[in-house]
Length: 245
Ligand code: C5P
Image (tube, rainbow, N blue to C red; front, top):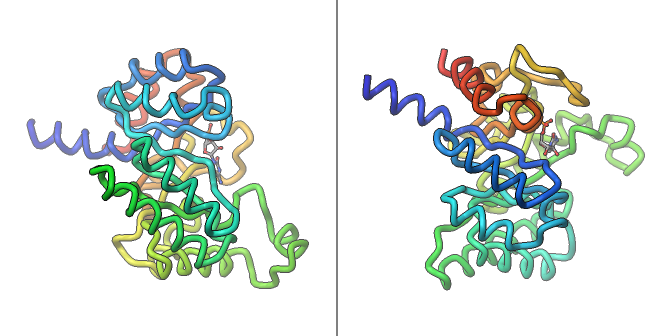
């Protein structure tokens, strides 16, 4: 029984709820409602732009782990500065665009670790964005990229690995090829998750939570199926039941 409880918690720890809401009060209420069993939450550009950095410190005080999804992409010096600053807020995970190149990725990792060591904080996971799921082969060609989308995604993931990143954001469809190229320890964070009972919304290529786990995802980012559900706690129960099978 105890073992089942532990396994259930391990499964719950893989879910990152996207706090795509418009105010600190809504974010705060969701975190209080869903923790436990959940603990990991994604703060994206919208919420961060509305609330500023204090959203991180306030949610951390509730015991939440934070994935700050700001997708940094700039010259290495600027990205390093921003990476150091958000690390000092205590974020547990943040991301950068791998299109910014290896030097920029290395600068982000070094700044995050140096700041964490100085402040006595754990190293945050630094995650690379490969190709946004809103882009397709045509968009890549527009930007001068000739290799296929699949090869580009795996190539960028490999660049992330070589630059010291902890993992990448990728669709579940891309996860097996990334796992094969980058190894077991490289974290794969997947959005585009839709339980069998929920609407697709604007997500094109979706997988259920169970399928995403089977494809090799380490973390599942889930937003609307939970936060727009009439009862977010019930949504979590149903998702955990699907994942636990
Ligand atoms: O509501 P939904 O489950 O679609 O939310 C998914 C979250 O993951 C959103 O915050 C969205 O911005 C983010 N995301 C995504 N696809 C990507 C990268 C991030 O859906 N390729």
